[in-house]
Amino acid sequence: MRQLLLRVSFEERIKGEHYIFSKKNVEEIINLQSKGAKAKSYQVKQVRTLIIKYRLVNQND
Image (spheres, helix red, strand yellow):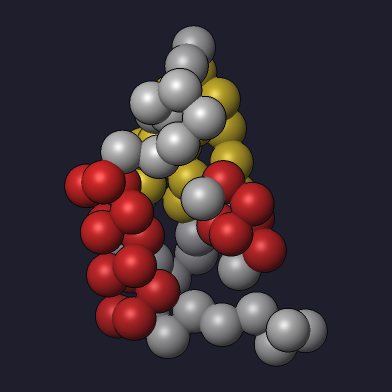
């Protein structure tokens, strides 16, 4: 999940175990906290919703 957000140009900052992502022209801020090696299900839904809403696609892929 983290790599996906970085590939679509989100900026990352880390505070403790929280990975906080923001991007210019995207109102929402994403806060990821891992559950072991996996993302929590609500976080996957949040990221998916943002990708669809803002049509975030990496042009290199």
